[in-house]
Image (cartoon, rainbow, N blue to C red; front, side, top):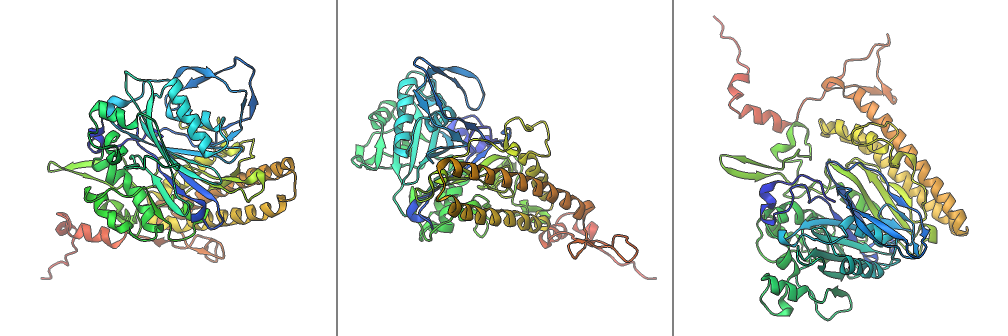
Length: 547
């Protein structure tokens, strides 16, 4: 997803637009999951993206029908391509068969920006309408760019169905050739992987059924002068991407944090690679150290490097309330030395995010579950949407509010209402948010489990109706409960105070008057920084000298 402001310093070598690198996608294969589901995640991070749920109904198309192509980021009309006889229904980044596709932009060599017709976003949503499986999706995607050309920058795609998960990386050939070069690798069962705005495929086997690539991926690099060695030594990322400080510290670090938490050992060895580019590149995948659940991945999407050397709640930028957020721009200069804040998976400017769980062992109407949230993944509520869902709940619908117009029954706006209060006094407010957030998500997980049992014996149509009702109910409830939560936070923490509570209500004295609130104050780091600052002497309490 484009539009995120990234420091020019960090990506100048890549020479890509400074608003173009933003997203995170994590992968867990079915052998790495607790219930045999394939899972992928996605955070669509953008300063201008309004969080809503897209859908497209299934359709039949007459011979000669054409599909118009609009650039996913700019909305500019680019052209049209022939329709296929039948297109599948989609809901978000999942289709009716449970196929899910996510992405992250890594830019790459500036001279290779695509000059064809199909942009990365159109590539995803056209493919979801035309493919049933991950392998079919790879063929559809590569056939599209081969026939009509590719118009975007370097991209990584997570492509998954109930059985397999793949990573595909693709980049255009520049102004003189509208095509693209690409590599796709199947993530081995029992392993986890991910990408976050940097090319992650390095060397790859040239004769392997689990690795696919364009016929000229190596020869094109040779012709352009990007590679001179033997075929077996070819490194896709080294040839086509730019590995600078931003690609490592700002991008690969997010994937490292996932590995650090869940890999079966070894991730700590790659911290020097993340911090300084030392040693070998981080592997494309790790064996999972535990059987992951959808809840594990939801909480991973809320990560700010907590408990690692990059923990964003620990440095001075966290301020007096341990805030794991940094406002843009991320880089800054002091005495001619450049510095940067960390860039975590969870970030304030997320439009929408999801955890997709795909499992052929579930009833057909729910073999794909898209746990979908809007706004910051750290404070959002993930609601269940299913591969059979055909109607978007009002709270997530297109047209219900936008970036310039508040709607109090739009999930995006009520989530922002909660989150933006917490950004000011995070350590004090986050326990109240977690209480409501966890309560809702735990209840929804239980409801989905109960519904799976209930719909197992139903027809597809009846199951679809029941699941639509489940989605509608929980989306409405989560939105309403978060509006109530936002009101509660405003009242409780008004004017820097913390109102006292008793028996579930704000406390009053016998006369009905509010009791004296608590004064939350600041953390010890804040007080120490004042004492050690040039203003410390001025603010130090000095008792008057007695005569």
